[in-house]
Image (cartoon, rainbow over all chains, first blue to last red; front, side, top):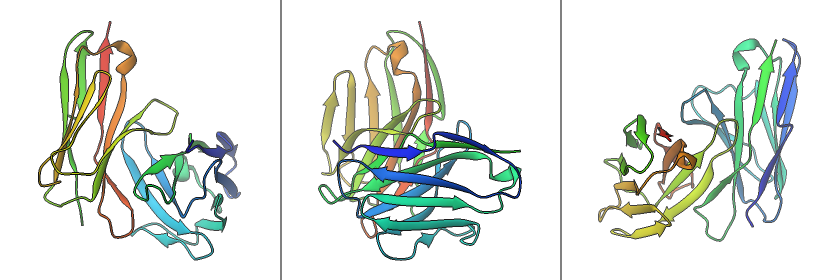
Length: 116
Length: 111
């Protein structure tokens, strides 16, 4: 149980275009989903927290107009990187929190974004 | 702001050796989780500790939560090359279930 998927697993896009990344909890309902960014050999940096049906809460320094998050249902959250630039190239990981236990988060496999 | 100091950041050892990774904070956490991550993949949850003083074992891995719930350790006995990876500790402050991550320990076990 507690499986989280992400799609796509990798994507290459041109500078100025937008990219959407999906995060799904496959076998449980996710009360909250989190989006992280990770640079090589470094820890995870939380970007935003999203609850189903409400606006995402962004961490300080994260541009909400650039990183659009939609949590449409209890099993799906999307992150759209708008007008992507090379500096947005990174490994993006989502996680999902269920209700039993409420404190455990399960991570997706990540999405490697490369902006050329 | 809650911070988790994780040490060491890098560890390279020979197969068969033992090692310990530490996570320390001045803050109290409702729970603390340990993850292992391999390159190009998401973190995989190893264990969650909730009660102060709690000790959990997962084969050759032993996890301990400090009595005051401010620190934790991961001890690996007789490390194997398959243990190679990035180990992350993460504390749950309890208010909104956001995890505070340590900087990670990049472990390399050489055959």
